[in-house]
Length: 117
Length: 112
Image (tube, rainbow over all chains, first blue to last red; front, top):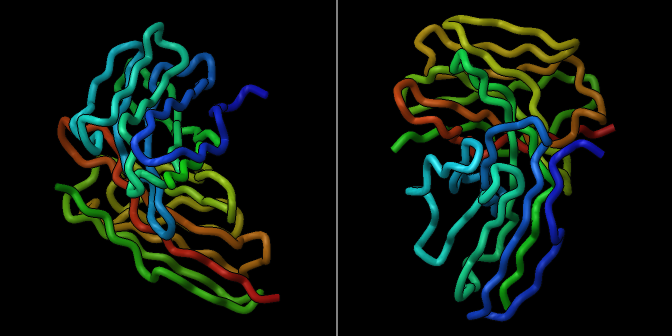
């Protein structure tokens, strides 16, 4: 399977615990995005990387959220001190940014569903 | 900040009827993308529109980008049960911002 993969698919945690999610993008894609999606809403942009550089992180929901893409391949999203309001689907997407500056479609992974008890 | 609004939020149609969802942005867009999300699934890219007034067709689906590049629509002719899902528009604002802003989606139910 050469699509975007995410792990785990489901995570149940207790309030106050830290959680980390992993995303493996399509191998030739240089851009990687993280979104959050709650029921009945569209994906909400959180942050994105161009290779290993995090180009936009002001939309991360709070300082409890952080993301890394250390080698420009897979990425991790960490939420510290989870709260019940963090319960949502966390989606990763990847795309190929062309040198012309044109954007290509984003390919989404299956998501990690987080439940904070 | 940029807002992208979609209407209607829900639409129930009888199989064979037409369906349209509308997308409006508070700011001018450089391009707009449309995605479909099946129940329990993840968003899947359908199309990207870039030019003012652009119209693109994919079989029974017709996509339009407004002249002012602030609105868009998706029209499905003669819906089928396989069209069930939520349709999202996602706009990329003109200027330096790079992230897509998704609308809240239109959930389509097709009754057999």
